[in-house]
Amino acid sequence: MANKPASTYHRAPQMRYHSPSGQYRITLNGQDVWLGTDHAAAKKRCAVVIAEWHLRGCQPPPPPAADVTVAELFDRFAVWASDYYRNSPATFRSIVAGWRPFLDLYGDTPAAKIGPKALKAFRAGLVRDDFRVDPEAPARPPVRNTINQRIRELVRAFRWAASEELIPASVPDALGTIEPLRMGRSEARESRKVGAVPWEHVEMTLPFLTRPVRDLVLLAWHTGCRIGEILPMCPGDIDRSGPVWEYRPPQHKNTWRGKGRVILIGPKAQEVIRPRLLRTRHDEPLFSPREVPQERRERGTVHRRENQADNPRKTERTLNAVYTSADVTRAIRRGVEAVNAQRERMGLAPIPRWTIHMCRHSFACRTRAEFGAELARVALGHTSLNTTEIYLEADIVMARTVAERMG
Image 1 (cartoon, rainbow, N blue to C red):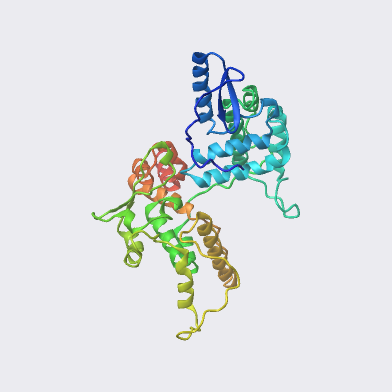
Image 2: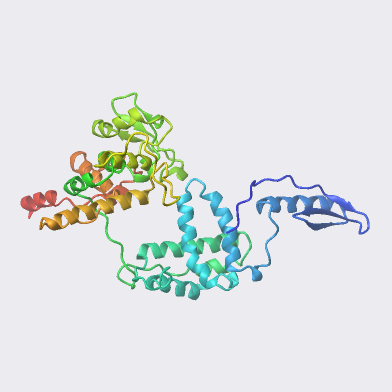
């Protein structure tokens, strides 16, 4: 992918008069643009040329639509998208990763010749998982919703190219006619429904987690926040002036919509993070993987002698200052595996796998049961109650009460 220009604005050169030809010209990106012999008309034409040059990010004009390949189209779109998603780099990386198989297939094909059949053929390959990195590995295709999302992202790139006059507008219009895969009407794998995790399963897993991951899980359980919202939390970001603390994450799911997000930290959640506040600088993350080696040394049965030299490093790997959501998911998965290994030795049934996002579902169910759906919506930070209903599971106890009285 092409690198983003260092600056989106450059001072354009001045229009000059070319004596041998009697014409006016301007040089952009090392190429002369001829503006004609009439000074007034050339001045107007120069203003248009400079405006289009700035609109292209001060880049040379694109090749004719018939010559733009799919690889060139996505290369230009990536430059635009990297700036558009500058506040959500994870989204940009996900989009780029979804393009790679498509570029492997059609990268050298003229973009104007990509039609619905080509996109359907690519989608069928996703359903069969033809593009996995290791062909010998077992097939595990993306779920139906992910496949539909990737097709939408591809169509959006073609639609952007049409707006830049790189390809005819008829190309994205034709691609937009493709119907998305519907549940039960395709061979695509369906996603597993994410529900609430019982506290018993969380409690059994906590001893097998490192301290920072354990505290992250407990904070998510007590506040219902998203994992991405609390990973960068620093002590200086928390307003502790009142009995209920307030944390406003710098980036969250609806930042691009201009909406604010406030995570309220009550007494139970405060007890989780209070010890961390005492030993963490105001501008450092509360939950860092760099404290794990110290925890392992404390658990060790053999301790190092004073002034003992460090062992030589086997790799150049370093620990990040902040966890990623994938790090937390992996740690919880390993914790559940350790729990199930212990339960197998005891002759007990294993517990199902769970993720930290399921703690948000549990928080939604507990809040709705005690305070109602409207307060659950406010606590979760949702604008619409319809979004909150996604997190709420059917309350079978209430349903039984209705059946006993009305049935």
